[in-house]
Amino acid sequence: QVQLVESGGGLVQAGGSLRLSCVAPGSIFSISAMGWYRRAPGKQRELVAAIPSGGSTVYADSVKGRFTISRDNAKNTLYLQMNSLKPEDTAVYSCDAHGTLWGVSYDYWGQGTQVTVSS
Image 1 (cartoon, rainbow, N blue to C red):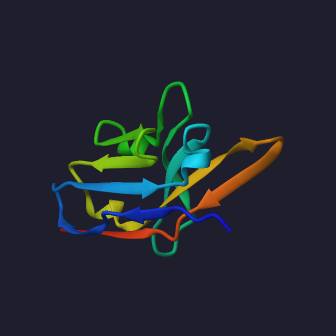
Image 2 (image 1 turned 60 degrees about the vertical axis):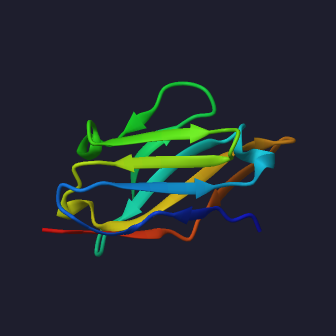
Image 3 (image 1 turned 90 degrees about the vertical axis):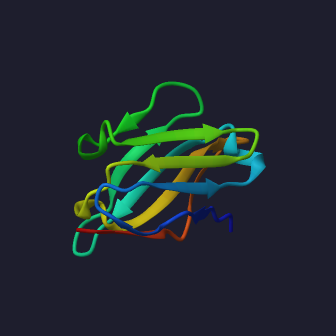
């Protein structure tokens, strides 16, 4: 079972910044559509930002102008730069990679990293 590995979460004060990273296997990274999701306590998981293998990025309205998703295909790493953090950004953040390889669809997830923003 392929699993992605996230890092970079932690505790930060409101207004601060964090950068999350997600490493995926090199065999799929460059061909995968990648995304960051989050799940806050008592809420459903929501898409934060997405970046296809080629093309424009997508952001949730709540993070536009504050978060930036990017990918480094040479390092097989997905990033989420989070600035101007708010207490409502507190959640477990997970990365996702999905696509099709040799005609077989796949959808892999990481275990998640906790982000806590204090007021």
